[in-house]
Image (cartoon, rainbow, N blue to C red; front, side):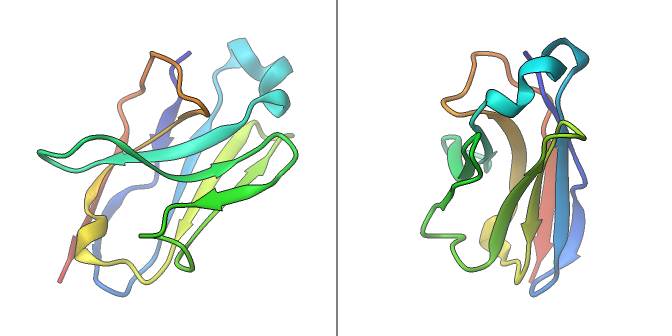
Length: 116
């Protein structure tokens, strides 16, 4: 199942962005049961998980974004969000959402570029 992320863009260091990821209709009925996560991949680097949320709403973050990013979900809207504050140039990446652990199918992702 491919999930499409949106909301990326160009922002100055210290700024904020909110990413969204809406589940495809094919998993609407079971979306609330999935653990979900946001991942990112910078050029020349491996894809990494930055934030996760369980079906019950428990969250976890990588050390690099803890205190700056917030993951949330709205099961009625079948959507996962990533609020990113105090953005740094090191956050420049393509951001993806997927289940946790991730399925083999990845959506296109959304580009986040932070200018210093």
